[in-house]
Image (cartoon, rainbow, N blue to C red; front, top):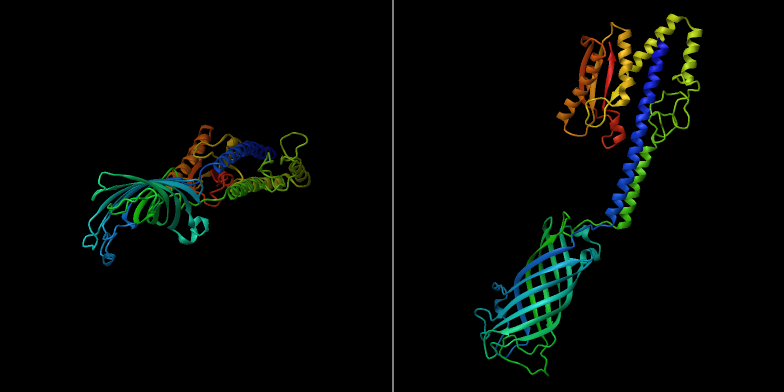
Length: 450
């Protein structure tokens, strides 16, 4: 009978290992799918490319002016300049360093209150198209400056001047030229930043003076200039969680290298040898072979006569029976069986979030059933466990339910309920919870014979 019990142990190991091989194949397919998704991700966008911007502040026509008219009173530079500029725009970044933007600006130029200048008013409408350079990324200092940033922009502009006072009221002039400037910025929220802008505009064919009092003939271009100091807000658009100017962007080659490192890590995990039989887990059909027993290239314990008992184990038992008296052999076998059970070699295993044992555990529960039937004076503690994934309170209940369900199976198989004691140890934190392979080993119930 003891030899028959050893046969059941071996059959249990074979069944459990076969199921593990199926899971290993499934995980390899999952890894292939993950690799495909990673490759797709490498081809995607890493930052919000679009942003909309609005600003307001002070615009000042620098030149030309008619005698007696001035842009502002120099004595009032620190006296609080009125807002006479409003602008809106949109920006698109081709890459983290380079992009384009367009702006529509409205400027209302006139003398300052208390100024020595004669009164005037000029409306200035402008549309610009400019290239943009993210200077912090260009010089690779984004990590050092943190939430700060700096943009440089330069391009072309088209504008219309409309005097609102003086002899030229009702007339308009279209101009064109260059515009450029610097925009220090600071990110205040994930996708929102504030910025200051210092810009200079040049009109290449201007004939109106900024005060709107004088008109120069077409043959005499005045080449006007205008400067702005403004404050504004920039809002990034897109699925990214952070403004594109500050997004953490990794080079595609680095991403591919990280992807390869992850795959190597998965391969290393597959190369683990759980039962220390010299065959890696991904090739091992029986991942719970008995230590010291010879296995073939697929990790299966050698059984040439196909009687379900490994040849080395069978030889050991036969020698023990031949060389020792039956009483001593029976006692040794009994102790070996108790050791296998009480030290957790016989266990029922569960799939993720399941309270019923998986099919690979049938032989294990059957082993306990036969032992209890053949030893009617014995009782057994059934202890349930869960892995660390999920809510602790839920996992404690799941561990208890697993023990209860194994007990119910044994009761329905003919074992008295009074001989079965339920325990729950809740979460088992003895393995790395990030490893799916390791977590399989702790979703279980174990048995202790008393």
